[in-house]
Image (cartoon, rainbow, N blue to C red; front, side, top):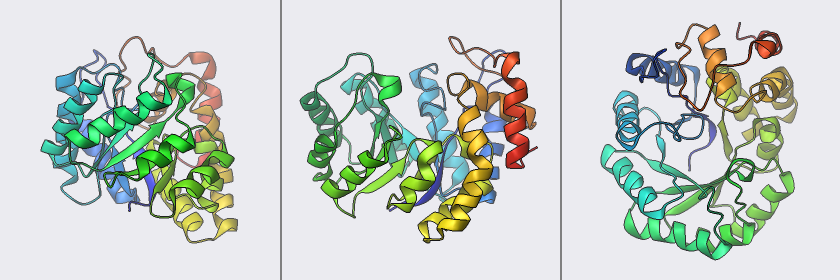
Length: 291
């Protein structure tokens, strides 16, 4: 089971929107050096919605090659078409990813039975461990704990990224699925508390900007050191909130550009971070000690 701070990695881009492969490699090296436990390429934060299928697969391949087995790679392979999700998951397996992260199908609003059959079909088609991803604020689709429990009986469905921010939801998933099923926070603002109540880690946006501190927070929380975990979390709370002043990944890409780690490239319909918010995010970055 993968535990700790898992980064939902941005996809660095040049000003013209082309993928910056050199910066992708340098970010991965920084994360490994900083104690990040695993890397998730081409999730929501990695602009999976704006890269084409060829680019999507290439980002996974380059990530796996650069990581070279030093930490696990959990490839973002979700789609609102079951066939496309199977195609991306198969590509991730060929590339050598350790697992995949599959967001609930967005926009078409499947039933709970539809969700169950969607994930069951992917597991039947591709022998790669799956982490489910529930983020109803973005998908208009909320996978209920009872559906998660049905899926958890499949040996290839090993965990969930639960991004509701609802601690009671996390408790219910643990109660229904048992201790062998991994639960990861998908909400940075409540991640510390979710880990302290028994989750296994976080798949984090904040970790893009403050990887060492997020890794330390997770180590403390997983070790039961609540005081240390909450102290670190307090230093990061500004980032947790301000990185969502506009839709993710707009603010986090701006923050990384401010730190000199990537260029400011982002693809439409995402737009550059609004200047009116720069001061707020810069203050949170200072509070967190990253600038």
